[in-house]
Length: 293
Image 1: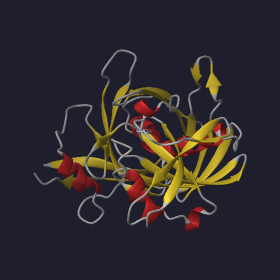
Image 2: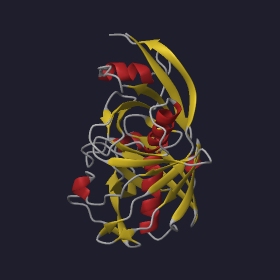
Image 3: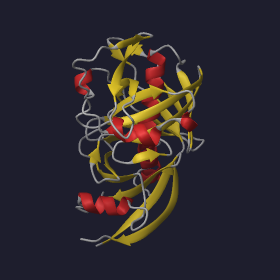
C-alpha cells in the first residue's frame, strides 16, 4: 500500500502526518513503527493522524501514535504541527481550531508570527488519574506541593530520585538537575519510563532551573526515547516548578530543539487554570511511501 505523508517538526520534535479526512488507512502498530523507523521508513518521534470531526463543535480528531506503534493521549509539539498542517493543506481556514484527542479537547491557535499556541487544558495532580501508585511512599513536602521518592533498578545503578508527578493528558515524572547537559537521561530515563509505580508508563523529565522565567529541559519520552523537545514535558516541568515556588507564571523553556514558552496561572476557582504552550511548527517535506503489509 502506498500512502502520502508530510514530515513536520516542532522545536526538533519530528512527526509524520497522515490525512485520514477522506477515509481510514487502517494501519497496524507494526506499520506505524515502520513509518517512524529512521533507517527503513520516514523517521519520526510520533505519527500524527488528521481525522474528520467526531462531534458538533469539534473541527478535527487528532490521533497520536508513538514510534513504538502504541497510541498515546497527548503531544503538545504535535498539536502545533497539526494546526499548521490543516491550514497549509486547505482543510480549514480558521486561525483557531478545536480538536478531539483520545481523552481531551484542545484549542489550537495560529499566531501572526507563525508560532502556534495550544490550550493544553489544566494539569492533573490526583495520583489515580495520572495514573501513579504512591502506596507505601512518603511524600517530600516542597513549596505548596510535594515530590515523591523513586528507587531505580539497573542500569540506573540503584539510584534514588525525587520526582514531581502529574499529568498533562499524559503522565510525567519531573526531576531537578544542576546541568541538563550532564543529566543521566540515557541511564535513568528508561528506568523511570517503565517504573512499576506508573501502570501506563511515564515521560521522564530532567529540569534545570535557570531563573524564575527561564529553564532548560530534556525529556525521555514514553515509547519514543529522548527527543529534541517535548511539549507536554515542558508544560509539566513548568507547572511543577510553579507549584514548588521556583517559577513565575510565564517561563521560556530551552530544549535541544528550540524554545517553548509556557504560561500557567495556577489555581482557578475550584480547580486549575489551563496551561498554554507556544512554539514553532514547520513542514519539512512531503512524499509517498510504500507500506509493507
